[in-house]
Image (cartoon, rainbow, N blue to C red; front, side, top):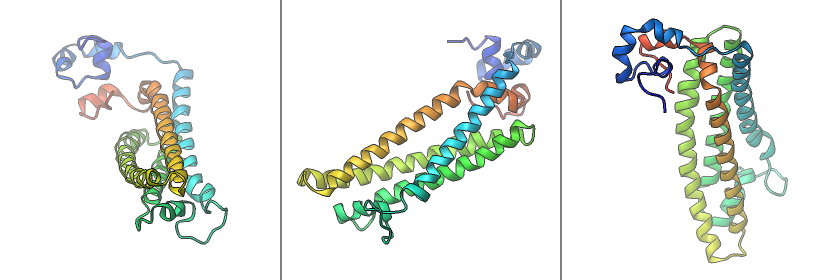
Length: 224
C-alpha cells in the first residue's frame, strides 16, 4: 500500500490530511510525479468508458422496450406484460418485480445515455469537466441509489414468490422465483464487470479529462 508521503499517492489524493502540508511545500514534486500515460492508453481508457456506457444503456433499454414487451406466451394485452406472471403466482396487488425492473432499466437507460453522450463529446475536448461530473454524480451517486432501490424491491418480490413456492413446489411461483434469481444474477454480474472495467482505467481516463492538481486546489478532487 502506498504511503501518504509518496509523491504519486499524494498526486491522486492531495486532499488527504497527511498530504496537505507536504503538498503545499513540494508542489513541483507532485506535478513531476504525475503518471505518464501513452496516447494509446488514454485512448483505450476513453473508449472503455464509452463502450461501458453504450452497453449498459443498450441492454437496459432493450429489455423493457423490446425483449419484455409481451408476456411469457408472447402475447400482449396485459398492463404488466412479461411481469404478469408474478401477479398470477402471488396474488399480490403490487407487482414488486415489475416496479423493481422498470426502475432499474429506465433509470440506467437515462443515466448511461447521458454518460455516453458526455463521454463522446469529451473525447473530442468538449465539456470534459461536465463529463467528469456526470460520471462522478450521475453514474456514481445516482446509479448507486437506483441499484439500491432495485435490490430492496427485488428482495420484496423474491420474498413473496419464495413463500408461495415453499407452500406448493409445483406452483408457478417457483418458475417466477427462478426468473427473479436469473435477473438478480445478471444484475450482479453485469454491475461487477462494469465497475471492475471502469476502475481499471479510471486514472487514465480522469487525467485525460481533468487536471488533478488544479482540482485538488479547488477542492474538487475525484475520489480514488
